Length: 280
Image (cartoon, rainbow, N blue to C red; front, side, top):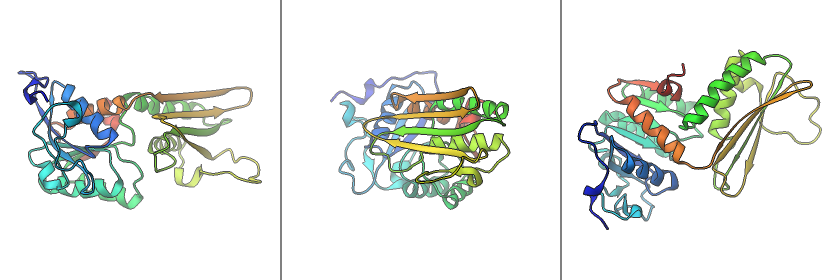
């Protein structure tokens, strides 16, 4: 292994001290690699579940060098010295980490999906004490797509049926994806509706004629698809499709680092990627 001193650095740039949850997972490793390549962020903590065989090993071992940052299952130890935690794990784990963040005054960037309304309320509670960026998708492109969907929904508010189709890899455990649900929320809000009242998540058998006020969802799972999302506005004589396709999780990692930089110097509050990208 090479020395940790070979990491990129900039004498002039501020160094954002970052901890990563789920450090041995696919997204965790992508985040660690992005931090490693960054000029203004440094890895100071790495968290994983107690059952992970990676606990106790160096967080950057998979990159072939020693960072001196061990992977731990102890949130307080993993967050010691961190300014921001990036968490793309599971709802229960994220909430446990956020409780520690709140106690220690550590900000958080949360890309975890599948939260219940009660869990979202707990996140909002934590944001009363620390800055939290919560977004189901940290990709800059996805969030620009959300803004386009908001504009399209307002212009196509009558005469168009709306369907959201998403595809992900075989290992994804929740459906529809958090990004698809966020798309539905953005569209419903633009139309003056509540997604809870107009979403249709499944169709089978004799379903009857389509209700034009609904927003339909379809989920595909297979292979190693990183994430594809298409929103179809189907009218009479024409249809408009707005699509975003991810070929790498790198976009999520880079968006997360933009969220880290956004939180620097900010106080408590619940933010999203529209705040980070200035799209509001």
